[in-house]
Image 1: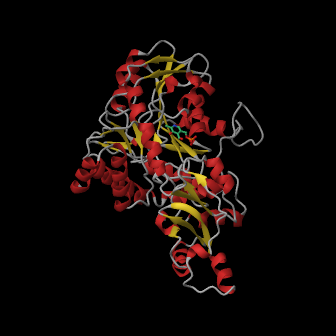
Image 2: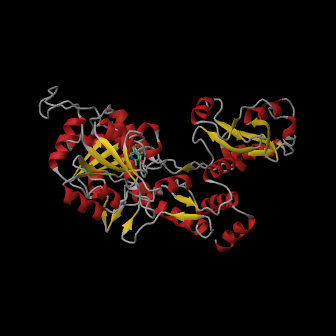
Length: 487
Ligand SMILES: Cc1ncc(COP(=O)(O)O)c(C=O)c1O
């Protein structure tokens, strides 16, 4: 829903307000003068006004409620969540001058969120089935079905469902016997979970810089940092763009190293038709709410080898020995996925191809509207590589008049949620003890990268408007005109 559908000028009639309320289905509109927030008017306020003798043509200014709750456009998720309630289902978000620039509702925290799931398929039906049949824990048909879907889709040998992408990485490391004293080579640009998993397994991450074009781990630096303690390479297919797996596997085979592919953002990414996650020993996926498809929280591992699969399966289930319940030959974890989560995942799998096509389209629209401008550089995707098209992310060139952080603030004032690219792992206090080999590339990428809204329900018109606002924030009216004409 657009902000305009929730705002009404105070000189309009209560009839006009009722029409807006009828269309927006939120039971309320924000009363404004040129987007300056004055108050709100609800269908209840209008009902009471009419009962007390007001005509349907009465001006909104006569009737509206001046007592209204609002938050600032940069309010935290916690603030917004704790303000929304059964009573306040939609809240205006205002800038420093009290102008309404965005809104939060019980459905979403911003007018244009950066990424949100679309639960438009059989999710409710399958979850209801779990509740009705009492199968809500980790035993149940949807878990097995979900594992089968992961295996089939990625064309892998074995698949295991787990609670999230982070424990998938941890389980992968432990199943391959990686731990105390071992080194694992990881990229400087990733989400912190990649390194957390290595450290929690007792091993040491060795952080190396990334390639300028692909933003993925540098194979030169992998080679340079192999020591007698190196046990594994953990490439991350960042934003869905596949790493150079041919070179990584050659290095791994030459030095007898394990390869764990972090495919959290890359379900559907492939090289020459071969899915990422199937090159190394183990590939891991995340099904968090913002991923390519979701279980709410969820993860999976795919395996080349049956031994690692069998070991991981036991470790996932408390270390219990198969065929002998409540007997532990090894110390394990409870990393299981519930049937409820798997039910959502199965329904999402049914829509995966449709989502993929839509994301690809959204990427092409952004390319069309943004890359014509002089402001952006894009992540390179080789011709024989397919991306998952997870999250549209670009680098701002130096020519922009404002920097990335300022752009994020300005977009937020326009109701557009965005996010910075991941910060370099090497810069964080949590990872200060790690060995590093850096050359400034990740620092540059991280300082200038921004991710833009990529939810699958966006239309070309939405992407065009977002792009124009982005360019307008960054540059002059000249540049904006240029893009609009080209578009
Ligand atoms: C690259 C990467 N690795 C690991 C994870 C962890 O996945 P999860 O959030 O499901 O634990 C994420 C995502 O959040 C990620 O982006």
